[in-house]
Image 1 (cartoon, rainbow, N blue to C red):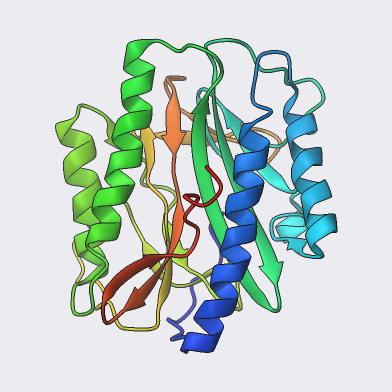
Image 2 (cartoon, rainbow, N blue to C red):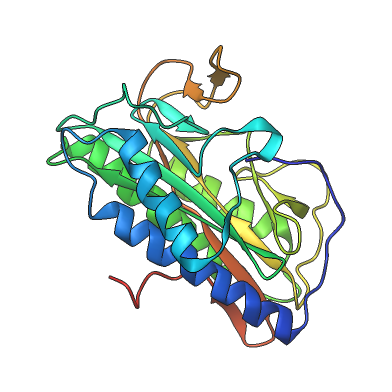
Length: 259
């Protein structure tokens, strides 16, 4: 979810430690939701799972109520790029892909992460879309070094995605995160002409490649939220919240301990 442009906010070690806890709740929730992604399940049921975890963990779902968004999860199926609204009518089918974006507020700080999952067996080209998008995020995170520029992150995503024959969404971008869900800097998945900010120690960056099989162009549906590809071809979305440290990037939303 794109928010208002805000200045970059440096965090201290204690704040980053709280943000890691927030993001680990996000990671655990995504893995639990993942277990229920199968043909016949509705996106509303997945949202209920996430909301129940928020209640049990005593955290607030970050997206629910944000600018009027009605749910805890953003669930985007097939050609839906981001911001899909969970629905009792949307039942997953074999061969679908589903992007699940989730965030929480914990002790005054936010966590945010996203994954795209296959529903049963999917066709090879769609699987390649998922693999390329996931790898582009890994390449982006490798550029999170003190002294690099935000544009180095953008270039890593764009170069790999376009060399792989896909396109990056330009209308929606990553962002800083902290005591606000959206802080500066904006993190595009493509290179812009202007000089981008330097990466400094203490920033936390929500890096989120959104990759389309066809055109990079998107449009918003009449619900005011759901973003779809202009050509109705599939789209994938992966996101991690990453802390900038002197020793290199730290993935606060890593799912390794839950997988």
